[in-house]
Length: 395
Image 1: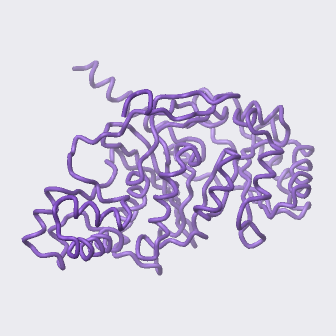
Image 2: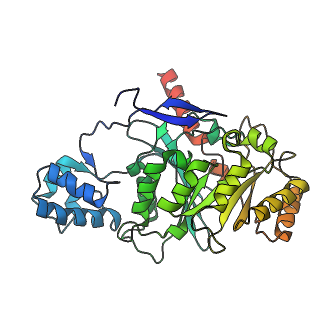
Image 3: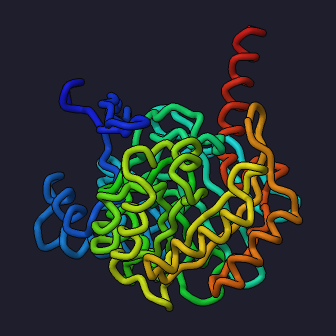
């Protein structure tokens, strides 16, 4: 692709700005099977010279070994003829993102610093709870947006993650947790949130196709009711998300007035709170059983007053939203210009929202000691780069 045609429209504070997106070309000439649809696997086998009837059978077998067994080595696929296994290995690959570093928090949260085949760092986080285990998945390397309270948002956008890099995060977590063969009962990994690095709705096609594999009953087999996609408010894509993916929706709201949201979530200058809340009201499938989640980071003396809480209740009622609110204590990072609201202020805010008939639990910060908490997914990647620079300087 030429540089001119390989552009992605990225929203600036007000207007879209074209930003070059480097093509993710692998040095490995073999075809990556993770992320391909069933029919595409069959077509790839035929293109490589396999008989059409055999390609149909082999594509089903490969799908099962990859997504139900977690196998990456063709020689372990016992129902494929031994003579054909090397033929497959020469032409195809089944890979995972590279693991640069893996950390475990004192509270059990796990964070991985991962690397794409073209050398870019990104992160994913697994958060275990008593009754569930949630994997926080990234959709981009860096981020298109520059939310002022979010450390990840201070990174430049490098590129979108490909389908296999998104699905690969789920499979890598399953590898680490020992959850093969795939089965619905007894899993530690029960939920997925598209809340890692990046804005999922600015990588819509890849996110949609990756989640379809995750939700496929013959694939990774995770129900769409156990998957949540978080957006900062890309209003034109929200209805499309509900129609074509159908997962739960979370919205990074964080403020109830134009002035404050313009400051801390600059995308608001493009779409506005009213347009965002109307898109929430129109979101396909939203109801009392599948409520929209509003994420609200608590910033001292910025968005945490009793008046703000009452306005939040008013807005949710005005748009007749089936919604709940997650109050998130701000996770500090070096250079941040905000502080976390006091526990007393957060409690008062929560009480007002609850009294308004809307659930407003306070999220318990997880993984702070390894910079894995909400809004912190940048630090490990930066530390890694600093370490590389130090080594180069020493050499």
